Every structure is written in C-alpha cells, then in structure tokens.
Image 1 (tube, rainbow, N blue to C red):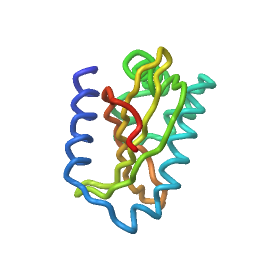
Image 2: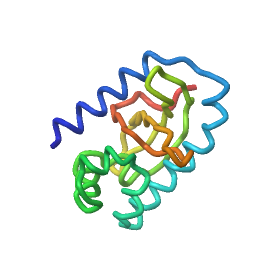
Image 3: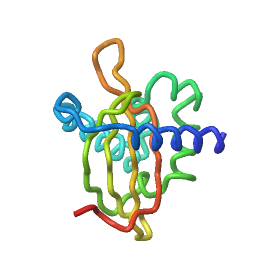
Image 4: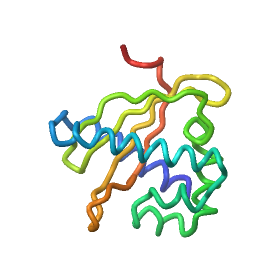
Length: 141
C-alpha cells in the first residue's frame, strides 16, 4: 500500500510542476487552505472519520476505512499529521486540477513541502485527491 501511496503523491508533484497560476484557482485558494486546516485539526484530535471525510471518494476506496487512512498518515506523513507550524504557499491550476503548496515544520523539526491536489466533487465541493510530501529548505520568500 505504501508504494501505491508514494506513486499517488509523486503523480501529484508531476502535475503540480506542469501547472500555472490562474485567477479561478486563486479564488479557491482560501477554500483549499480551509480544507487542509480542517483535516490537520482532525489529525490533531485523532478523529479518523473527520480526516478521512476530506479525501475524494477514490482515495477513500483505496484506503478502505478511516482507521487505515489515519494509520497510513501517522506512519508515513508525520509532518502533516503533527506539524509544529504550517504556512500556505501558492495555489496553482494544473491540467489535472488545482494544487496547494503547504510548508510545514515537522514534529521533530525539519522543513517540508506538502503539495495537495484537489478534485471538484459532483456536489460542487472540493476534496483532497492527493498529497506529495518532500523535504524543503524552508518557506519560500
């Protein structure tokens, strides 16, 4: 499952690199940031069901249930599971949907860049479709 997760996050990074900023996505940036903050708050509370609810249906199907999803995040994505600090970067459109940059300081220090991808749902809401996490030299100036 870890390989599948890694591939999903790498795919997110590739589509992020191919994108360019747009006025439409910039307008949704606040919504993306709120979704990410809400999911991180759910991680902090240990609320697996709430954290899982911010993922697209396809991600939910891949991870099967909230507990499995939470365990995967806890084991492989500590910087977003228990961040010391969070700073939002730019929001960009890509050919596969919008992406949000998030700079985090992990629970043991260290700077990380989390690239979140989003997918518009049939009901008009946005959900997280992936996250690519990589070491970062720090917050972009």
